Length: 296
Image (tube, rainbow, N blue to C red; front, side, top):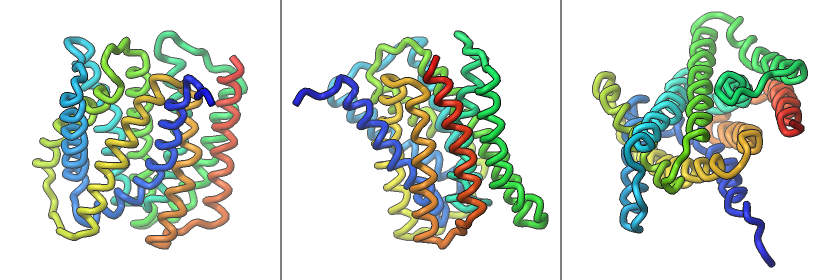
């Protein structure tokens, strides 16, 4: 049977859908041992170095000049700021809640896509879908934030930091997709990860925190390096290069489901009717926006 030309692109997307859903729990476990900035720096220094070394051993060509500089810069924007915000937020809120809040990412993607040339204007139905998604996010975060006290403050901080991460991830992804790249996507992903690790090394030194050594913390780090970064991010770069943005954004539907289930199994993180309803509302908004974008 002859495979579709996009077989590997969709296989990469499936990999992103599953493995990135597990990384929310992986980050929470890793934070039991590693301070946030140290975790980001060590994770991406390891994954970037391993990927780049493997690519060079296989004879892959490195990008040069402007392409190299922009690839590295986009890596800092996507992975450094985007993933760094997630890691920091998980010091305040449960991993499943973080995954649910991040489901608003497609709205950042669509909104920024309307601002970056070539601009895709936003129409009424698109805005309506984004407002529905926003209502779901408010339902998800609002009650905890309105409760006040330390828990409410933590919820607000976590949600705001995650929005910074979502905006940065979406911006970097759109810029990367617009970059005329000659390098193999795996090589680009390796450079981006290494650049993010190098960029966060000074922050890790400035905010060292305390390392609490444990087998679970080390295992979680190795899992994040292997399946979150080397497998997951390489798959994301391949999918982003070969599939439409609207299709790639589908991973936002699957990741929180995986994250919520694992968070409940391992940490008994709360998941009740309000969280389920908020997820359904957000997904409805994302589905409306995606349908409208696909129909153009």
